[in-house]
Amino acid sequence: MALHPEVAAYRAARAAAGTPPLYTQTLAEARAADLAAIRAGGGAVEQVAEVRDEHIPGPGGDLPIRVYRPAGSGPLPTLLYFFGGGWTLGSIDTADGICRRLANAVPCQVVTVGYRLAPEHPFPAAVHDCHAATVWIAENAARFGVDPTRLAVGGDSAGGNLAAAVTLLCRTDGPALAAQLLVYPNTDIGGDPSGPVGDDPTLFNRHSVAWYRTHYLTDAERARDPLASPLRADDLSGLPAALVITAELDPLCAEGQRYAERLDAAGVPVRADYYPGMIHGFFAMPGVFTDGRRAQDSAAAFLRDRFGVSSDREAAPAQPEGTGVRGG
Image (tube, rainbow, N blue to C red; front, side):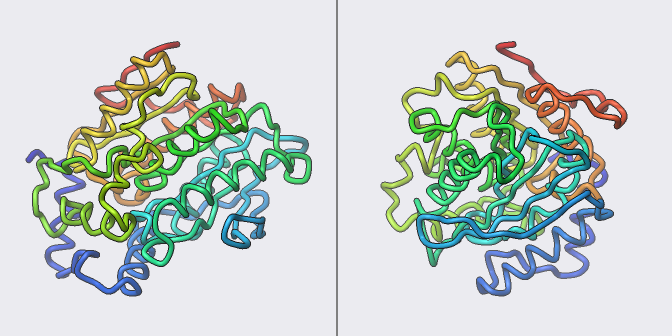
């Protein structure tokens, strides 16, 4: 297992501290530890011109959202971002650093959605919450200063799974989407989460994947549903252009890469960014992993291109090893 030097240092620090795996903790402990780890690894908190919390109608009641708006006026391109955490952990606060940086770097408006968590609300509650929020934001574009012709969805890990599922629903029911940003997404819940990490308790491993899945799915047969496992959809044509980010040492790497290949075969413009030596979670921890910052820059550049906007920031760094550009 070829660890990036920063990953090796991270792994050693966790081992020395005796940090218990999230899957060995109670839900309350794991939720608190997950947020604390992301905050510790997120780096400096960027200031955004406007950040506000609101509530919008959802299938199960009011949904909390947080709106990040960069400097500027008028309708803006907007990214709906869904946080990670295995559908079990996470909150609006989990994605705060990512949303702030993308809002500034694109620049675009970012709206993150506080969807319902499992096991209290198992599949498909989170999918329907995220789709409802996407529809509601599009229908209320004037209120939120959204350019409805430049609307995208994205997320990391379980959030990437939800973003992919939302694109399937939007293809039929709307609204039209300009892009999807899928960061090490779960795409096949019923698949085999194998990989070089194995059972390493200091890293996200196959036990982590199984723990999250057992909370999210009350019936293993539901893993066949494309809204749970987008890779199992019969047809992926007509979906928005995608950036799929994967990490070599992530148990979800292979299924993310297969999803990018399926999108490409279906005629969807897709770019697949592969980060050697990186682990699951690196995108959310740019304060620890240099590649986390590079991946966020790459995501911002992709959204800039899809939204047709310019930025005063420096150009994004060179694309990572294994990057593929397909479909135009």
